Amino acid sequence: DIQMTQSPSSVSASVGDRVTITCRASQGISNWLVWYQQKPGKAPKLLIYAASSLQSGVPSRFSGSGSGTDFTLTISSLQPEDFATYYCQQTNSFPPTFGGGTKVEIK
Amino acid sequence: EVQLLESGGGLVQPGGSLRLSCAASGFTFSSYAMSWVRQAPGKGLEWVSSISPSGGNTYYADSMKGRFTISRDNSKNTLYLQMNSLRAEDTALYYCAKETGGAAIGPLDYWGQGALVTVSS
Image (cartoon, each protein chain N blue to C red):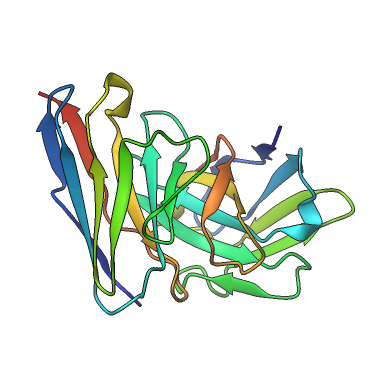
């Protein structure tokens, strides 16, 4: 199975900050990488697919990059509604494994 | 509007069985792969199983293989997860999710609200 490792596991940031979350795959997955956002008590929401393609309706302050084994999710200017937990998932091969999550907290 | 509504969760004893259902609406159900993803209390997301649009291809996480069965009834727009030989570690919120395409491994663009399964004596 492909292991997905996210870092950091949590980050404290202020409104307006630039936040970067990293996801590393244990083997190359090309650009088969998805990012989700999950708020407490809610289902996950698709943010980015194919490593860098923004899902319809997702604000442009979210962006994704990377290929192979190293990927990043960047929030260019953190907004109050962005405080949540973010998960990466590889969709290169079964099982489609998730990273452990990164919680973005208010500083 | 796409809607996914899970049902069938509850409290079950170790070794017992439960069947989850997910009623879908707002899209052409038979055209999309579907998945189950679970989340143990306070933990991260774990993929459970996926099924192709026709139901002809199914996929499982190793820890669920042989115990869980995913199926779908395209005439009823409903996805199922039959769970047998349940263990305490299967306790989780089980989400039904729609894939963006038909590959059964693609991004999941719509999710239900989840069905809580608690395995305890």
